[in-house]
Image (cartoon, rainbow, N blue to C red; front, side, top):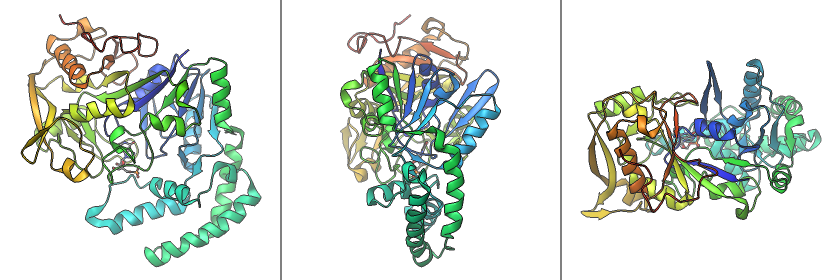
Length: 443
Ligand code: IMP
């Protein structure tokens, strides 16, 4: 039995969907612990492509229970669309449970998100415009609507009438927007409530029961460490806690139940939205990474900014999340490169800086110090063991593991499930056993 957290070790979009899908095979329960429909992951199974925003990819395994935890924010309209999509493709959604204390994204959240981004002008965050920040803001301000309110028509009517009127003042006076009709919002959300009711439960209790029964639980993070509200590149972050610590708060379990934390990182770096990105590549190499890696957002379709692997933020992710091991994804995207650079440290104000600076202004001034290694100039898409990899690709992975001071357990070389090298069983393998020795055998 092992309870495992999977987190993104960069700025999101690391390919967590594929890794959690692989690990879900040995999980009895998969729990999503933060974020909302800002996230998006694509899972390819045989010739079918699944695009999910809220539902854990574990839903593709018929016996796996999937839970959307209390730390998430739920847009019921999008969730219902996802349920419909899965059902149409023949995937049962009976095993999906939703926390009754998760907060609900309302139409005014989406409008406020987009209007406030417009108002910020050049100071905009580059949000997904899905109402995530305003939903979490209401949670903190204690004016939020929770799933439990949605399930109680009388309480929903009362609370929404008051809240919509209150939000209308802000929409009209501050943002010059058309006010919402409270009754129309109530009617719309009562329909959503009926559809979602069979799935809504006390999820912390369900997870506790699963722990008592020694089930394997996979805690699935959305976004990534550098987008964390407390530990990321604030203010260019999301409004939740994607770091491993968020898994306990966002599901209602104590830290003592967690056995392992697995970080997912791309073999290079991407970022969507605004904010500093020291290894960003603006020229042809950046475009090559974007095109080969199909770096366009699942949720917004935005082109992702691309750059070299940054081992400074990698080491930071190891520290902040207490990573036991790493899954490196999209190694094949580098197949055609003549040379590959890795940022090993920063230069800031004339000094070398080995650690991620928590001061955002200092981080914005950081310039990468690179180590450059030769590329392998051949396809890795069909490699299934470390021995199949070209020597330079193996050396590159070895260097990443050394720089990040953490073993690599999984290497992914394409979107499908079989395009994967399992170096060490990430869940049951010896914990941190490879850390002090050579993580990857050399030829
Ligand atoms: P929000 O989460 O929509 O408020 O957006 C805040 C920041 O997080 C923006 O820079 C978004 O581009 C980024 N972001 C949010 N969700 C994701 C994601 O799933 N992948 C990558 N970036 C994301």
